[in-house]
Image (cartoon, rainbow, N blue to C red):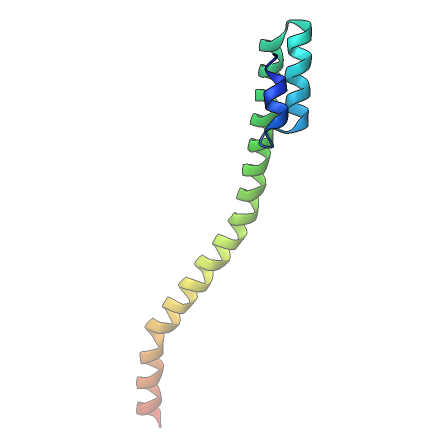
Amino acid sequence: ETIAEPLSNCPIFPPMVVSMISVGEKTGALDQMLNKISDYYDHEIETTVDSLASLIEPLLLGFLGITIGIAVVAMYLPYFSVFEHIGG
């Protein structure tokens, strides 16, 4: 029994991975195929993390801006209230 046969029955492994492992077993280059699979998923994860970081960065900047704006308004609101009572 080859390694690819039980992996094909498991839904966790994508068909591409199973096919590459099967080809690696048939050609005797299983280690090279596993390295290629590893490189592919490393690149896939790196791309996903980069895209998430580029999405989170503006959201975080907006959140910090709103938080600082609320803090500034909360600090200066009592001053405006005092000036209003003095002037009016």
